[in-house]
Image 1 (tube, helix red, strand yellow):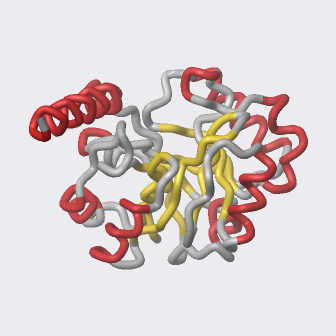
Image 2: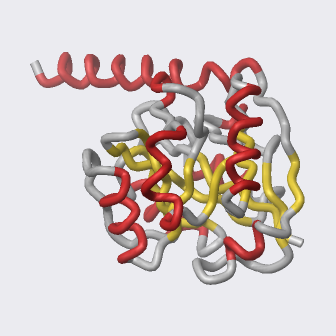
Length: 222
């Protein structure tokens, strides 16, 4: 049995705070972790190079309809394309398209029901439990949608720092690959845990830190 978390954010995301050492520590309890920074593969590739293939290279990509996660990627997919175009770019790399935190409104750049209609055949996985989600209604809608359209489900932490790691995961039978992961998730078991209070605050704290670092850098250059 293997535990995996398909949605985390390293320091390469402006709102992410997981370091290389945080991922090394997390791999002691979670067997496979996807690094899914916003619109960049830079951090994920560096972490995989350091820690090996138990790190899955992914990306949370901004589209005109909301965010979509690409897993097992090799090159960046540009933000700002339509959802359908982005899914096509993911599949062109033999990657998998996973919907993060659906049905939660535009505050989290979530994809909603009307926006799903034309792309359902291109979806590989839907995140039905997000460890940082406060929307119980969104979770119920995601599960109903997954069952209606026979989509594999995933439980992920959406961790943006150490406090968010290790409380939520999916459990599968074999090491994940682009070819077998959807089928494995269709038979997975799940651990659905709430993030700690700090885990919920980590994105905001990290954005504040990033802004402060930029200001410090500008002041040093003067």
